[in-house]
Each structure stands twice: as C-alpha cells, then as structure tokens.
Length: 321
Figure 1 (cartoon, rainbow, N blue to C red):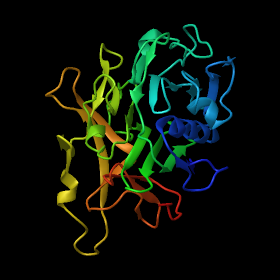
Figure 2 (figure 1 turned 45 degrees about the vertical axis):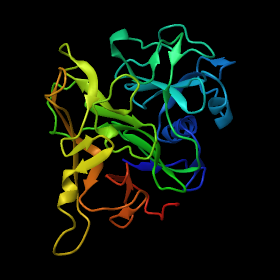
Figure 3 (figure 1 turned 180 degrees about the vertical axis):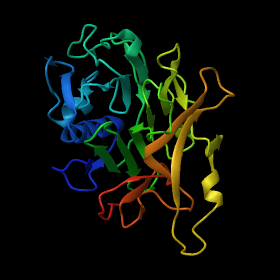
Figure 4 (figure 1 turned 90 degrees about the vertical axis):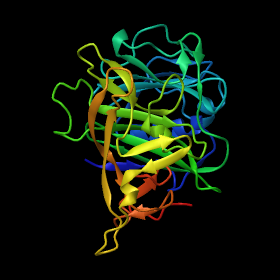
C-alpha cells in the first residue's frame, strides 16, 4: 500500500478556484494511483476509450464536459461532469460493473452497466438533461489530496481557501475497517462531498438529500436497501454550528499531545429506512482538540481537513497556506 498526494507532477500546495478544477486534479491523482479513465467527452469530442480531458481547461471551461473513471480492480466507478458552469457539477457512482450503458457522447455521460447500481452522488436530472449542484465557491484555494494505490483505493480531495482558511469544496471515498461492518455489507464504502461555503463539517455528517452535500453509502445493498445519507454519531449539527463530542475531551493530560479517534459512520434511526450502523473509517480520524485547517499531526503524517474536524493521511511536508 502506498499513498499518493496531490499530483506528483505538480508542486505541493497546488491551487484551484472552483469545484470542476478540484475534480480535474482529483482525476489526475487517481490515475497515478492506478485508476483508469474509461471514456470521456469535452463537450465537443467524445473519446470512447480514454481521457479526452488532457488539460484542465477542457473540463473547467466546457459545458457538460465529463469523464468516467474506474478503480484498478475494475470494480467501483464514477462519472464526473461539469454542467452549467465551473462550480456546478454532477457525479454518479456504481459499486460494481462500471458505466458502459446509455448513449454517451461528447456532452452526455454513460449509464451504469447494471442500472440498479447507479447512484447519483451530486446533482440531479438525467444523463440527457443533467442538473448540477453548486460545488466549490470561487476564490483561490490550496488542494490537499490523497489516494491509496491498494484496494479498496480510498481517496480524498479537500480545498482550503487561501485567505480565510475555510473549506473550499471536497470529495472523498472512504472504506470501512475490517471487522467493523457486517460480512453481508454489499459495498463497505462511504462517499461524500461539500460545496465549500466555509462551514461544512456539519454538512458532511448527513443526512443529505437531493442535491445537498454530505456523506452517502449503501445500507442493505443486497437485500432491498438503498443508497442513503450517512452521518457520524460523534458529530451532530444544529443549524450552521458544529458540535463534535470528541472535542469535549481536549489533549492528553499527561503528554499534552493531540488525540485522534476513529470516525464512525451510520444512519440515524430518526431518519427514513434503511437505518443503522455502517462501520468505522479507514481514511479519517477525528481530533479531540481545537486546530485549524491545514495543521498537521504525528510528525506531519496526518493533516487537518473539514473545518479541522477530521484528519487524513499526509506526506510529511509542510503544507502550503
């Protein structure tokens, strides 16, 4: 297993200004980690067998430009599409079989090979008439991104506003720790995103609906379940405020060190079925102390993201600010 950070061909601290730019940089990082762009379109030209979006401008500037990308084991797959503008995007996910159906073209994404596998993660509408969701406010931001080149190929990309330090769009696929979920879980991952308006941690805790940001995953996938909003039982939101239970504990009283604990996923029984426990994150940990986005922990091997509520793996370098 090896983590890759940002795009090795570009410097640590690469900047971006909107959600479509973040998704293009994520594409480049995922390719380094072994993912394959299976088809794509730049709004004018359709590539049925590869990546037509060889420059960021072809994705960012072209209405309904898109790409389909599949993990190295040919299992999980996504389509990412820039819709009406560079901060308006649509994302679909297939847990198995990828995207080989429908009528893809230069401006139309394919459908999932198995229709029941298709889940819209961001945005709404149809492939022929897509509607994007607001994704990534304008403004210079620093990209913090990681992708694992070993199964199940977790990844995350988050932005930090260069001026305010607030979140500036994010997208991730987290996997559950072994023995933390039931053996019958048909897809032990959680997928999430935020649009980057500066107060996003509570939104990542679900329950998202429609085009709203948040975390999602399958519950009872193989027995009549659904792809639904997820949350963490140790974080809850009241309006735009975030209440993170671990932060009530603070630092280790003996050493003064920051403490992190595993992030847990599930769906509250107060919501519509299916509900219940999902599992424990392998990518993220929660922090018990107050920190700022971009701070690092454990000799810079983890970095703070999501309004400094979560930590994820980092490459040991001093992050750009």
